[in-house]
Every structure is written in C-alpha cells, then in structure tokens.
Image 1 (tube, rainbow over the protein chains, first blue to last red):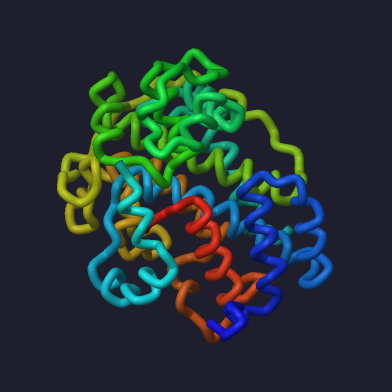
Image 2 (image 1 turned 180 degrees about the horizontal axis):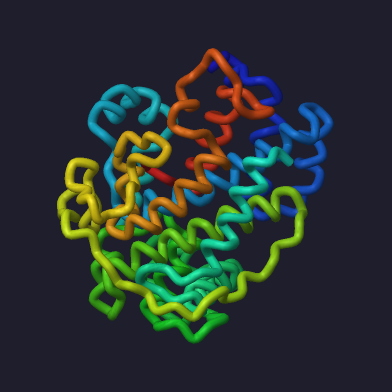
Length: 94
Length: 236
C-alpha cells in the first residue's frame, strides 16, 4: 500500500466505489458503474460486477458454515489482517 | 458479455429452478424469493443496527410460507452474514431445520445473492425463478461426512466415496476449507462452485499471474474480492 493509502491498482478508486455502491445498494450506483465503464470499458465493467457478485455470495457461504481460516493462511496474513481490522470481525460475533 | 459468464448465469437460474437433494423445486424457488424479501425486512434492518442482533425480537417480513426456521436462516444469511455464530446455527437447527437442508439453503441463498447482485450492479432485469419440476428430493447424505471443521459435518476429499458426486474432481478443486463448506450436500457445493468460478476465476487461474483471464487483471479482481469481504465483515 502506498503512503496515500492507495493500493496502486489500476482504476482502484472507481472499482472500490462501484463495489461499495453495488453491495450497499446505494443511490449512486449508476454513477459509480458509469465511472468504471468510462475508465475501463464495458467488458471490464461486466467482469467487475461478476467478481462483486461472486464475493457477495461466497462470503455468505463462508460465514454461514463456520469454516475456519486455514492455519498457513492465517499465519501468512497475520500482520495485515491486524492492520486492516479484519481480526475484529470474528471477535464481533456473539 | 463473455459466453462463459452468460452460460454460468443461465446454469444458476436452471439450478435454482430445479429440485435439489433436500428441497423440492417449489421450495427452492421460495428460498430465492425469501432471499430477495429479506432486503426489505424491518426486523432484519433493526437487527443489523443492533450491537447484538439476537437481542432484537420480532417477526420477519416474509414473502413465502417456508418454515419459520428456514425464514430466520435465509434472512440472517442474506442481511447480516458476518455476525452469524455457532450458537445461532445450533438454535436454528434445533428449531426444526435439518443440517443438510440448512446447507442446501445456504447454497440457494448464495446463488440467489450472486445473480441479484450482478443484476443490480449492472441495472439488468432479474428473471423470476419458477419451479421447473415436481421431483421429490432424494435426501441423500454422503456417508463419509465428518464433524470437526465447521459448524456442520463436511466431506473431505479423502472421504469421497465412488457413489458420491465428484465434487472436488470437477475443476481440480483443492479441497480448501471454503470448498468443503457446502460439502455435506455435494450437489449444492458443485452448483455453487460451477457458477462462482465463472464469476471469479477457476482454481488453476487464481495464481497464474502470467496470464489474464478476465477484462480486469488479477490485482483488480483480488482488490474487489477483498473489498466485498470487508463490506460483508467476512473473517474468512
């Protein structure tokens, strides 16, 4: 991650805003979709929507079945999971 | 739209419309309708806003005559999956939902969520799922399923019997925990992954960084995946 908080991924601002609007059912979804389309084109917009849809689904599979993160993955990602606050998701469960 | 994606979405619609292993076609179509209804449920909205969701009592705004335990499971998975717990799962099962039926329900909710999110993201119409057959579910459970990994028994690759569907062979799935999640109902697992791997990437493409398989690159795909996981508070 860069000092300005960006990840350095092409069109990341537009893609993140698209994901936020689509998953969050926000009123600015059409504008966020158009922004991705303007920067990356129609096929990329379709594939971005597909990834968003796929992970909106698979997160529910993971969380509704109680599967643990594999130990090697947990170890390899421990630092950035803590930095991003991901560890708090599990502790928030009651 | 690339043909593989269009075909996968069509297969998802067909899978949702057909009888499953634990729910018949009419019931699966009802689960799809109930998944959509959950987005407009006042009880779910109040629970999402509450620090402890189960402390908020009430009745779901239901669109179907599915059993109460199924409606509770569908609504919570659809609206607040990141705060589900083993205790909630046990209560749901003890209130009258068989574990296998729950697993197939999860797969139907997940497929319904995928097609709905895709349609919403692109402002495309979403066809209603209508029951496509009147077949009775076989209610077959894989004999090798074992407890210990997640909340319910799961079928490890080494425990797959010849009479079981080839749930890991198809797509060269490695049998990671997320692959095993739905394995108590192998057909449900295969239906979900058949669609998911086209929405995202097949197993072999995930770490093949020398080639791009989509109109967005690996970095863009993984960034979107991580963002959606965070939005849904998914620890996995």
